Length: 117
Length: 113
Image 1 (cartoon, each protein chain N blue to C red):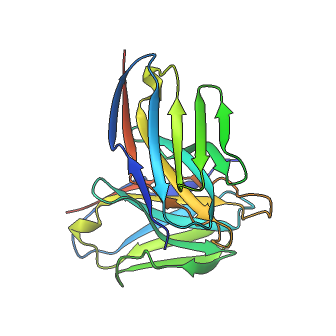
Image 2: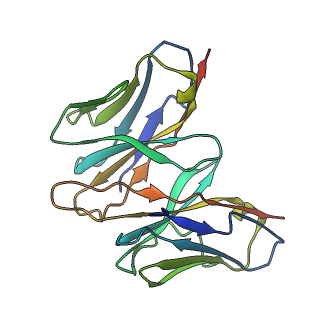
Image 3: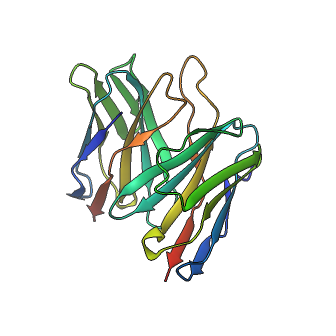
């Protein structure tokens, strides 16, 4: 398996523009997570899905952020309009669920480095 | 909700020394505690995890201990090597938490030759 795939790997955009980040989870995984990483705030969970359904979006910073998972193999994180403080590395991760005997590892994608000028 | 605190934020050791990173959690229902390693410019990767039904787990030079009463767990790296230099994150999760991980703030470990 190719692992979790994210695109683009780097994105530079101007303030006010719309940004769309993409993620393809590992085939067969039924959980998908979006994280944001900054020096100041560390690794923050933004939203996660189970079987394509959003379970918890309490980490989404504001209405400018939205996420969708139209099918089991694709998810997007959209920022509209973007602001300089959105500059960060955005990670997507996927996993199997809780098995009843334990948890499964979350596999992270390579991340998208977003710079908003 | 769950809160995970991690200490220290930075740690510098000489090659061959041991390194210890400590985390505390607030939710007594948490029962899964993974540790992730993130090398510079790379993605976080799981290095070891422990479930609440055990007190210690080892994997070669890495070990994790858990004290459920005190609600803290620690990562121990023995015989450190320069390639151990990275940021280490602890996390906690609980049954019914839909596999949601709450991460600590991270510890930047530097191993000097």
